Image 1 (cartoon, rainbow, N blue to C red):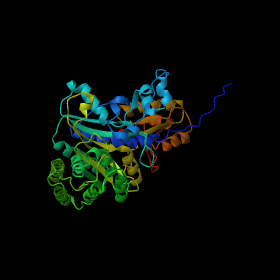
Image 2: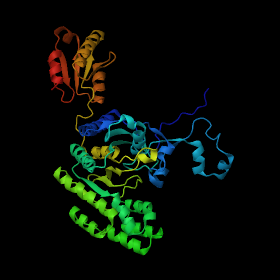
Image 3: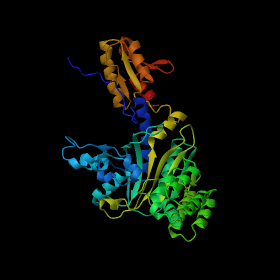
Image 4: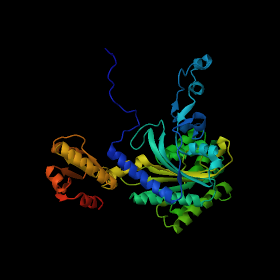
Length: 460
């Protein structure tokens, strides 16, 4: 007799199962985004879920590296680990010996690796999109998961700011199609932050500065400033940062104030000029109404070098980031390739899904799969129903037949549970006349029709 205990089914934290109706809604989202990506000339690629740790580490900053999921080497992973390393109980050193691979943290770093490996087969500028799961060992909370999908579009091999314009336009178009009427496309530029570090004479503390600024949407400014002061930033540096954070007004007012603040600083002025171009060109393209400059936007990932964007949702209870991106002009060099400038965006599909559920933004028919169920009374009518089934499917109608002879009530109950809108009911009378009973399971109406007429109804 086995002594194995029955295991209670449970999910790993930060992960989810999806019911068929939820998958249908997710596929609706993916299809909308894919169509817009394709419309703008982006081609789809795939990369493995598993990457070498050396590919992933050092690309997301210290905080990002902590959130990487590591995969233990197969077999006896401690076998070749030196005893001296184990005795030190140094997790970082031990990790080098026991884990060579990890789950991808995002789709951008794998893209850079992909481009370097396959550059001979790609046409540049390379416009790609990728939809797939990523993993982060983050603390799960509403709208934040450890396994989630990203929908990315990137342009590799071009410095033109028109790429930024197109990506902002994609954000604008997709959210318009999804009926997100209250979104804000917040933009800034990492060159401005680099110039800020120069003005503050804190170039050696740039990472700490950007991480602190990136917390401003969750933490009060006074707390951020006091934390930086405790982290060896002096009073003059804090004063200069406070003045920078105090820049306010509309886009034109902010641009003017930024130019004054950074007068003489070439690094920041270059970023301001790029921001100005994006704002002015978006007016020409007629999607500028949701764009706002936010000089506190930092996008904490280390690889960003220029334009950065974050999409904020302001409707419902989940008011958070639902998309982001930016320019990363030196990522491919990390993999031994030539420097190919890149810029990209990512849709936060999980949060978008949750918001659409809350605000009831999904179309009513989005979860429709099977359009009609064939029901019957006995074996002869079952065979007849099977022949009709073939005609329906040949005509492109999503149809299925209840698999075994059962009471009609049981068959229709099955249809209702699957939210199948119609049923074709076949008995001896229908077989003789060729007129089948088409029942609308939503309003209860029923009519006798030929297969040809049923096809017309199904296609309306």
